[in-house]
Length: 321
Image 1: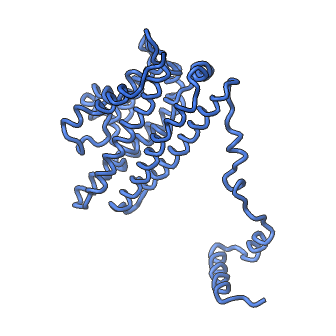
Image 2: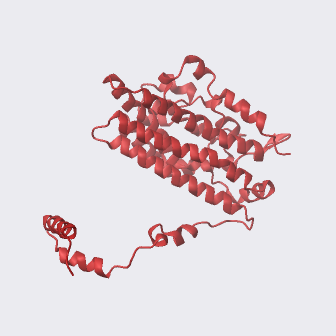
Image 3: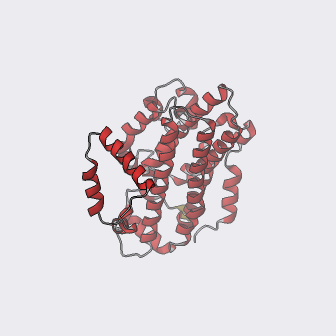
């Protein structure tokens, strides 16, 4: 059998590669010769993936709840992959930064648009029953989501709004003590930390603080300012940053708020979320006024942050009866 010039060239390149590593190319060729062909199901570990849904109750719609949250975490993992590429880039350009921001925005837009699949895919009565088996677990405990937030902005912008001025010059650890989401995981009756929050802090607090410290100069807001100060054309990047602000701090929380209004609002009282999280105060953007990029919004836009979106949701969603 005659070897083509193209194959001969590649064999020569492989020989150089393995010699540079002190390896015997023929041994690697033996491995290739005896290896089985790769299959789709083995490559993505399909059997393992499909075995990861373990409902705690006999209600069939619990499967939908589990699968959707697993899909969400996979999207968060893709977003974090982009975050890390941006933060670790040795010679970051506006073009690279903007392209990665576009990817992150697409991930969040896909999640927000698909959230209705889960909401419409669960029978209300089944949900209100199987949810009690989840205690004290809560979607509030998504560590990946918090890491995306930390990558996105200066840590001070994640502090509860009434503490930001006071803690502006503090350390990341000091600011973490008043991070906004802690106030959404307090017991409604006593104001004490819920078990949900205690579990979450025990697992992730050190990780979040370390990431916050590492991201002081490499979070998206800091990197944007560096490019802006260097005179780079940042208009397209600013558009993507604004869109991320809306996607993460308005649209995504409101997708959950719409669901909570539907499933957890019952006259004459509100049903608490799993883990006792205070969804009435935690989810509406107008209460938190969490804004990643305050310099990119007008004073009026910041004052009315999320209000129009919340009003629209309340007008569209009929409370469960």
